[in-house]
Image (cartoon, rainbow, N blue to C red):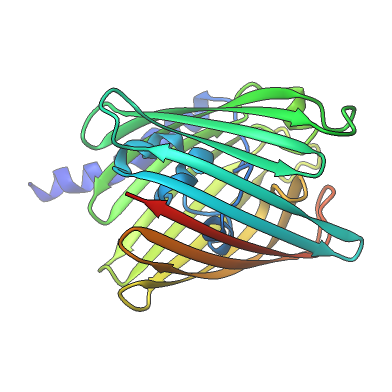
Amino acid sequence: MPMNARVFRGFLPFLLCAIAAGTSGVSNASDFHSPRTAALGGAGRAGPFINDAIYLNPSFISYLTARSISLNFEKYNDGGGGGRIYNFSVQDGTAPLFQAGVGFTHRDEGSLVSIGASRSLLKRIGVGVGYKLWFTDQDPVNFPKGSDAIIAVTYIAETWLQAVLVVDNFFKAKATSQRGAHREIAIGTKINVMEMLLVYFDPHWAPDLPEGRVFGHELGVEVPALKDIFLRAGHFRNAYQPAYYGRADGMGFGFAWVAPRLSLEASMTKINGSMERVPDATIYNFGATIFF
């Protein structure tokens, strides 16, 4: 391929995202963080691992050609207490018509059902939609029932470059806004550096934030230290933390052991400083995924 064509194709996703940002409303980050997502500081929209696509970027499910089952546990602590979050999800990226997954997340104040579906229109372009349905077990005033949506487009520019545009909380429903989740546009990128380093950078824009701090980012790196061991680290600024239904700054760390049909993962997130209702806190995530 001529060099100018390769350059154009490489920058096409950024051009498309810039156009979309100028013409669209906005969304919010993932309503659930797996150990991998947490370790990457919330980044990874352009390259989610198996069932993470349900929450981060449903348009990527078409490129995850496996069936998978995932179990996750999260514990968070702060000076005023803490809590636990349980998550279960299944995903099928092998169906011929379209590819989809569904997840169930439970916490003290209620539960969340998340559904994602994807279709690859062209070999390098995938589109996806997601639906989230909130239930409440207590305090229906602060945590009402309701639903919202997520829309995403993935572009596989090169073997070393992937990009995505994600519009989350598309309808700005009351159930999501009262959980601190405002509409936001996120542009996710994944850069593969010689199979030795994976870099994820997800800047986002949420103009509806009442504090006026509308820009933020998630940045993560992933290193295949051994054949089956992955080390991860991430940084986030003004990024949504689903454990606390609010935004914060901080860092994440984690690792994974990935076998041919099994992945075991763990991470720790340190939230430094506070914004909205998020205190200084430490979050621990553990998860297992079976894929076949």
